[in-house]
Length: 99
Image (cartoon, rainbow, N blue to C red; front, side, top):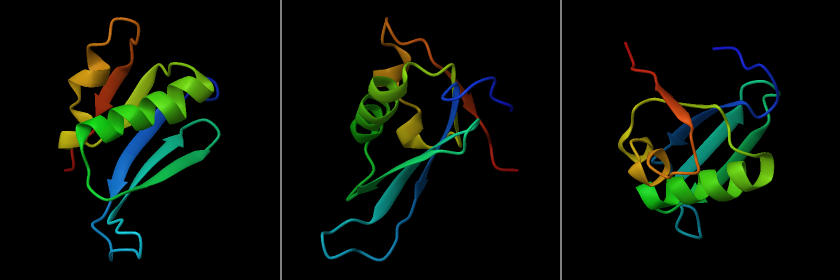
């Protein structure tokens, strides 16, 4: 997929579990803008739908506006009705399956 302009399309993924950090973090949630390759990253102790929804809201929507597409791997934290059913947020989620 090719983005038409900056912050139009974001790829989201969770990395981990990793070796536990001194602060107790095991995962990294990563969002990459497809146009500019700009990355936003946050450490997580556990991966919950609420954390993913908050990350998208605070680190993407509030900073750059509502993206047209989010691209994910169809993982549980990304099958998220907290974002998908919000009446003011119309983001098309493209789910890529591993083949």
